[in-house]
Each structure stands twice: as structure tokens, then as C-alpha cells.
Length: 142
Image 1: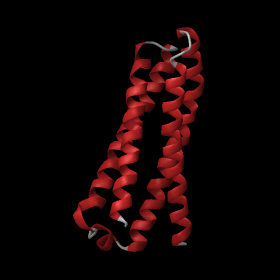
Image 2: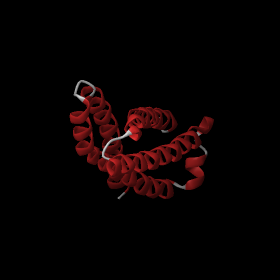
Image 3: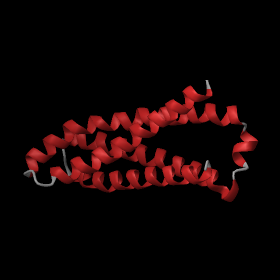
């Protein structure tokens, strides 16, 4: 059962990272489009963000299972506080994802508008945070 939840954990990670990279590439490629077409395009592709949200749910649920299977005390004894740093980054990721969801909802309500300019910055922060989580997890569980 542990291996199954570890598999789910990695699937959630892949979904989150994939969404981050996809958002970055789509944002960069959409800069070449004229403004009305760019707005229409981005409003349609924001649904991809749901994949990242599902991935985060998978990460959290499988991570909780792995935490309790391994033992909370054993997990928190990982040297250098890397597990604590990883968990802090996960909380930051959740906050950023909430901000992104609220911003996308506002952009959809307004059918574009000034809120749309915040999305690339939030996307970049999400990707960097996700990469930092992978980095700290790699060292924490090495």
C-alpha cells in the first residue's frame, strides 16, 4: 500500500510541475498574439490550472498517508530541517494557488482586464515554488 501512495504522490507532483511548465510556455507563446485574441486564448486555457489543483490534492492526501506510515517522529527527524522547509513551501504553494484561482476567476468575470497582467507573475512564482519543493524533497529524503 505504501508503494501505491508513493506512486500517487509522484503522479500529483508530475501534474503540478506539468501544469506550471505548461502555463509558462502558453504565457510566453501568447505574447505574440494581438490583445483581443490573446485574452480569448488565455481565458480558454486557464482550465489547465485544474490539473495542478488535482495534483496538489493528490500530493497532500498521499503525503499525509506516507507521513503516518513512515511515522511522524521519523519524518520530522530528517536532518537540517529540510522536511520543515518542504512543508513550508507546500503551504506557500497552496496560498499561491488560491491567489491564482481568485485572479483567474476575476479575469473570467471581467473577460480580461488588468487582473490578467498578474497571472504570469503568479505562474512564475508557482513554478519556482514547485521546483523548490522538489529540490528540498530530494535532499530531505536522499
